[in-house]
Image (tube, rainbow over all chains, first blue to last red; front, side, top):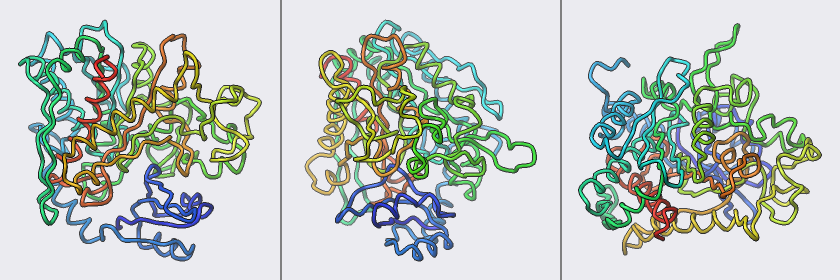
Length: 86
Length: 389
């Protein structure tokens, strides 16, 4: 899974919810140019393939390795109350 | 309290705040325990006679910043009031940038702090969805969990409801929208949808009913639901595009059922009054601009800091309509409650996917930058609502 930005024409972008494995942030939608829209989201490899098949532009923001590393670090820093079960 | 905090830590911290400031801050439990049996509490600041305000966070499990940032904001507010000092948002340096990016220190005067406490009845529900947060934080494999933890139906393995699609505003989207509109709405009736399952009924979820209870019983007039991420201040409506001239085009009118388009420029637009005594759009724009300016001006003079502190102020619709959201529901009470004063409802989407801000789960090193934006925007709002702006 990686964090990406996806851009494309309005109609195609409004159907992003159909793409399995894509978890996009609805409120990140921004109009970029020529009536095209861009959203940010987390995509699996399968979702990236589907986005490519739909001829949407995909810009990597955080690669999967970096995302995994960030999460590993962050999970080790969660402040828990004493004896909290996880 | 250090970011990121667990659900249990957040609850414990609310108790700490109330214990440390018993004259000013009361902690109370909400009536509906979660599906996993957790009790949810909030803190109330003020003597109860002021204008009712509610700030909430943590409806979406994976959005780790809002609950932490809301708690530290209340903590600073209470400490400043107790000490008779200014509310200080400390300077921050983003050392991960090259070269470093400095963000300026910002002060809200002690007089503003006193006015907020005296003029407002401030409720802070820092963590709406503790079950979801606990699950999201249980393992990196669960990091992206968004919903609550409602148990699966018999024969299914699919858990959870999106709290922010469960409120009773256009909840039954198939009935509400045209087929084309329903096809693009950010909502789903499939319990296995991992993101936006609306639940078996409107307000079916205990977490939703807890928020609704506060909105109704306390007659909340100013509501902000803090989410992440996209550096946006969002005002109503999210169910359709706004219009100010056709009052009969409204969510209560069954004559439009099945015909609402849910997009910009279609035959239907959601009415938002903006004249005479009901300047609801204008009220949102004024408050939203104050929040936006506080974050931008608070960045200081560095051009990169300012660029990274620039939040957009826009309606919630953007590209996709969303039904059943908390802020739309709060705002809808302008038309369904007997409150005479206007009700405003915002969603703050703090943080970004860009500039190393980490999307839903920023690193510890960049968290103070996003936390300060929540503090700046909320304090600017509170100052303004308290009448000092």
